[in-house]
Structure formats: structure tokens, C-alpha cells
Length: 308
Figure 1 (cartoon, rainbow, N blue to C red):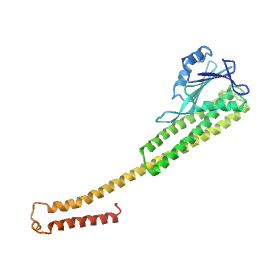
Figure 2: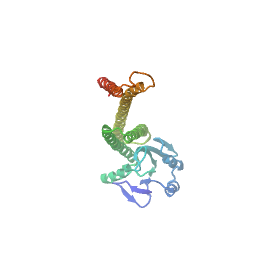
Figure 3: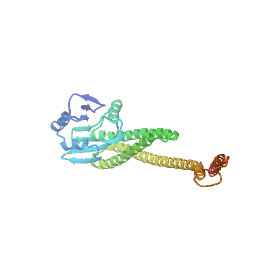
Figure 4: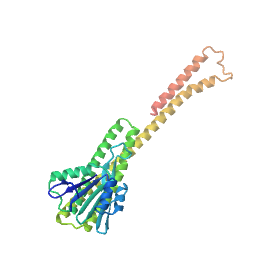
């Protein structure tokens, strides 16, 4: 799906392409790809790069085309091993052509368009739009990190009541998401530092770049903090599980020994040997009393040693 935006004095949709408009392409199909290649003449290989979900953040310059890939946060709506991850957003610039291409429908781009409409100012040029996209990316990283932190706290509350595999697996998947975020944020920061020297920027752009750098730095630090918290939390619950397992094994050992003592006495008096109690009327009660007394004595000793 492609949308043409007039970026002067706010965002307004256009029926067709016009010079200096913003072409927003979301989840491109064959018709969109054909239009971009035949009508706007963008490099065809770059669409394949954007379609690669593992493509790193980078900047290229090819025959006048400025080709940028930035990693943006993305939440999978369906159940997934990693609910939070990052995806590539392609930005294509040349003279009066400005295009963004993303192979996923994202809340970030929807919010970006909505915010720019409310802002009602538009963009001074395509470079201004690029850095505003970077700023929106940083802000959405922070939003997603807050959501991840909320999930971590919810899982910890459940684990405080009962150590459950479901919550531990959920924490493990959030750890994967934080790893994706940390890697992508570092890549975006590196890309931002390059674009400061590759794109023609003015004073307003410089101020915007400083804001983006602050937000990106905060996102990177929060990712590191949450990752450390999650790692220590996983280690803590792993130790709790090991301790619980040791307690269970110790209890089972003590119970086995309790049952072993009466069995030992019964086996001793049940041997086919002369022990003087074969014809004694009180032989069985004596053996039974001795078994109970020996078991109670071991129980008292185990309690004294805090084995149970």
C-alpha cells in the first residue's frame, strides 16, 4: 500500500506523486514494487535489502540515491517466541523524491503520521523528515522498553507466589527482545553519527539531531538496565529452583531412612535363625515396639539437625 503525502504546512494526502512529496509504502506488494522501480526509478536491489528482517542499520549512496536503513521497534500481534523485536525501515532520497518503505504495519509509523498531522507544520525538507523519523524511533524504543519492564514486573509477581515454567519462559523471551533492542539501538546510533556528516544539515537539523542523540542514549541505557535486572532475576529464580530441589531431595532421603528402620528390624527378626523369640508370646509386640521407638528416635534426631 502506498500513500502520497504533501508535507508543506502539515500532512495532506495526494492522489498521485508530485515533486517533493513523501511516498509512504507499507507492506509493499508486486504492484508497489513495480511502481517504485518503473515510475520513480529507485534501485531495485534496495527493496530486497529492506525485505530482509535481519538487515543492519546502514547508509549507502548510489548514483545520486541516498539509501538509508534504520531499525525500528516492532511488536508481533500473534504469539511469538520474541514478542518484541526490530525491523528495517528503508528511507530513499534523491533530489525531489522522498520515499519510506516498511514491510510491516507498525504503530510507530501510524503514530508518526498522526503526530505530524496534529503538529500542522510539516517538514522543512527531506533531511528534516529523516531526523524526525529517527526521533520517533527513539521515542518508541522507550515506550516498548517500558512495556517490557511492566511484563518483567508482572512475571516477577507471579513467580513470587509460585515458580512456574511459563513465567520463566516469558522472562527468557523478554531477554531475547532486549538483546534485539540493544543491538539495533547501537546500530541506529552509529548510523545517526554518520548521517550528521553525510546529509546537508542546517541549524534546526543540528538541534533535532541533539534531541535524537539524547533519546537514543537514554534508550540504550534503559535497555542495559532492564537487561541486567532481567539477568539477575533469572539467576535468582534459578537459585531458588535449585534450593527447592535440594530441599525436596533431602526430605525424600529422610523419609526413605524412616521407612528403612522398621524394615531393618522386621528383616532381622524375620530371619530363619534362632534368636530366642520364636516361641515367646510377646515377641511380635516387642519387635513392633522396638521398630516404632527406633523410628521415633531417628525422627527426633532429624528434627534436631533440621533435616526436615
